[in-house]
Length: 572
Image (cartoon, rainbow, N blue to C red; front, side, top):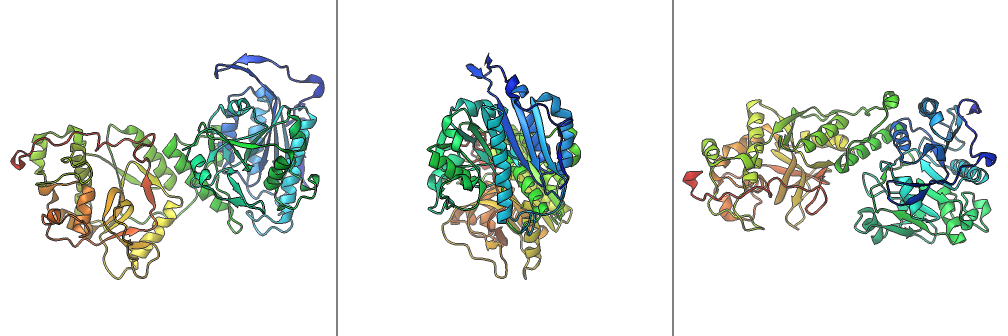
């Protein structure tokens, strides 16, 4: 076995008992005395070339004295360039840490019994148990105060995470990590057979409806262990160290059982946003699937913060997975010039999705004057009041309608077959590109000509919508709100314009269901006698709002605009 255990290049003396760290106390930016304890960070790497540029970048950005940190890397059985990435990073960073030790096996053979990169036979669990047990034993032997067990598909974006976890003063603590779905690095429930069980509390902690540190039966992927506590002495990843262990042959379950038997509680903390974790692959997944999972996560991170970042040192290992392009003639994105933050986020999302997008400067309703509305021929529909707020139409809603209307005209003028229209506050569902390619293939097989397909919407009726015959993911759209994303055919654009909607203008998400004759207000429908728009919706949806009402980050440029106070139609 070609194992590299470098002593000269990659190792400094690791926690030499003769030359222990001094117990200094420093006033930190946390505004309280803090002892910088020694910590061994143990990292397992396998086929993570694509995550390592981000993982290592955030590792080195931790706001913790590097001379108090020892790093221990294990990497083996790779079929990618994971070891090459590690060697390059270690060479540059070795002098920055108290020590770096790396155990690197450059053989690319599989573990006995493996059927693929994501397959976990018993032998693989045994191998991981041995590596984790070696790490915790080494940390104890070298008198480390803590060991932090990290996986290489974790991104600790909060630089104060290590500080914060130590201040919790728990024996076992983990930061709650987000993913692109409901997956995280903790369990709230465990079955009698010691497997995962979903609970109501899980979603409350994951969604941060409850904030703090919570005792849970399982934490993994980023686990900080206080080795100074006597009760930590019996913590183990090896089931042979547990008396009459009868649970699954699994490293994290064994560790959780050892904590339970030792009377040590596990805690997950969500009081701050600490970082993110990749969704694990399934047995038959190939490595490229993990690259797609990384793209999904990067799109999710963009909703909540800036993009995942990487050190330019590792730029050559950063790539966007190859996928079929979404087969539309044009993709439009509507954005107000005074919202450059949203434009920047969406542009970063489009880069990840490999989408060539035309950015349309939205008509800013707050700048619309009565003279401008007269020039455009805009007249309010008589008697319109918002169904929920019982108020007249707002100038922002007029600006929104005009923005969509201008795109409809361009679709007609350029004779496009299919256009995708997006607003600038959308959240892309995982595997968005793959789903869109399949959706358009379904549309091409339809025995009729469709006009509009909702990609994201708010259903306003409880009645079940009928599946489109012969399709897997299309339904006949009922009364719906939101125009955050939809496909529009050239024929559909002509129908939307032909009704002269500016002469009886209402919000665009009221206008659309009127034209496909699913609107409940008969009085409004009478203004548009030809209601033959063929409207469908993808189900499940592939777009959602980036922010909902009352969520942090939510801003409505329509609701925050003034209402139209001039009532005579002749003055508009």
